[in-house]
Each structure stands twice: as structure tokens, then as C-alpha cells.
Length: 126
Image (cartoon, rainbow, N blue to C red; front, top):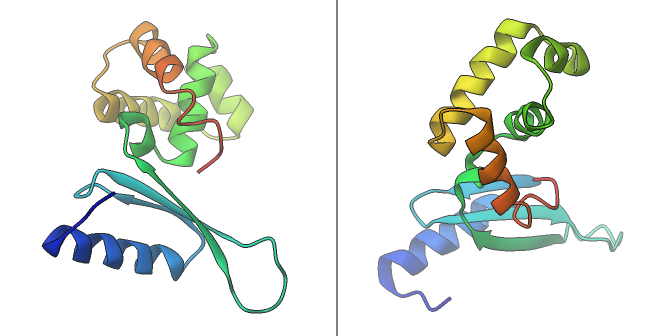
């Protein structure tokens, strides 16, 4: 990515922020997802492995929302998803509503289609 001026500054700031913690940072303004994980080298230097990828609608889901969405597309009811995850059915309904809003879908069939088309993006956990 060739970045100049304010975009470069935002990108550098986002990467700096991602490096201060382990996990996923969604940079909506840049259209990127930045993931930082500890390096596989245990030399005490605190090295991080950084992965930057384009932001897709599915990337906007939290890890729990992605888990709920995956279970819903397998045909499980809200009640069964709730039992599987150890949460209440009302929580599953609320998360389903948030998932639908974030992805701009209105039913499970469309949700399944969106998740299937984005499966390479979700192949590794966030």
C-alpha cells in the first residue's frame, strides 16, 4: 500500500496502536483490519507478528458475533445456539439483530450467503 500524508499518518498510528496489545484492531477509516500476535520467538524482546488485510463486512463482527452467526447458518435455533454457548436466548436474539445490522442482511439465508462468500476472510480467528 502506497500511503502519503494524512493516510500514512493514520496507518502508522493504527499499527502503533495494534502493536501495544495483542488482538484485532478494526480501522474503519482506513478500511483495514490489523491483527497483532506475539511472535513465535521467545527471546523476551516482545516481538509481534502483524497482519493487515482489507476490511470486509464480516470483519466488523466481534468474535462472539461471528460464532453466533456461524451457528445460526448451521440451522440451529436461538434456543439451541444459547444452550451451545451458555448464554440466554434473548442474548442470542440481540446478537442476531446486531449481526444483521452490521452485515445489512434480513434473514438467515442471506447471512449464510454473506458468510460463505467471506469464508477466506474468516479462516483464521480474529
